Length: 364
Image (cartoon, rainbow, N blue to C red; front, side, top):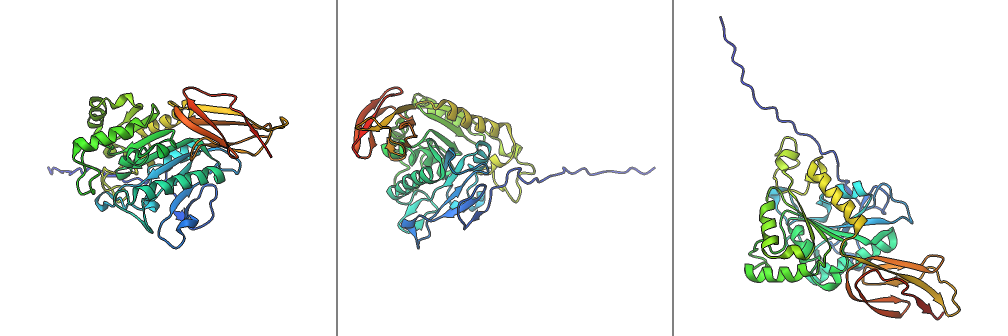
């Protein structure tokens, strides 16, 4: 009698992601396309951002906006640091029918692949182009999110809450793998350490979150982020949620040629319960707009005639255009003092709740 021995090896199946990020094209913006945009101020430089308009996009519509920052150049994890290779926000944009922007880190005429470049230039680039997307492509100024992976996850707060002007922009904050202030960073030119100093500065930034929603995502390291937030009393500064995707379980055949490392911005492209948590967090934040208020009113001339098409500004990126009845409504505003302006007329307000009947009389 012969005995047959079988050596059973595990069958490793590598599956393409169910969601594929569109290749960046050098063409005019269009529904369902991701395109390269070089602002006129940067013609002739290597600096650009990418713009994705959702497949449901139609001129005249209103759409949430996701602003993403990439990780550092780290080839071991597949991160190039380049705008064109971002992945994190696309699945959310597809699910929500949102506009997806990937912003550069700017220094002079260069797009920087490690850390922030010139912080002032990077922030100014973002503010200028978020406004343009809201003006030209129907981005909803009340529903602008910042998101990021790795370097970009730190940048969600480090850049997104760097000063009052940029902090005013966002409805919510989504970070994956790393968080501003959680650990020290060496060889950064001083901003990331020593830890005590860095954490004090990170707390000052997080205070600008002003009770808005933040989702902290991490690949199996949720406890360290909860500890940092809880022990530092930072959970009182925003509506903080957590999600902890296990990349090894989510991605079939991991590691594979597409995802060689668990530190990745591609996990949202594969179906998982954790991805559904992220989608639901965005939907709930859009619906409830925690930590924000609205200002509304009417614009008319000295004879009481309503004025349509007037731009009413309540911040660098917050604005509304009056309807045929002269009415406007600006949502997504954090509490505190601000100016509301229409054609040079200014109201000084201190926002503590929704503010109605803030009217303007314009001389034409």
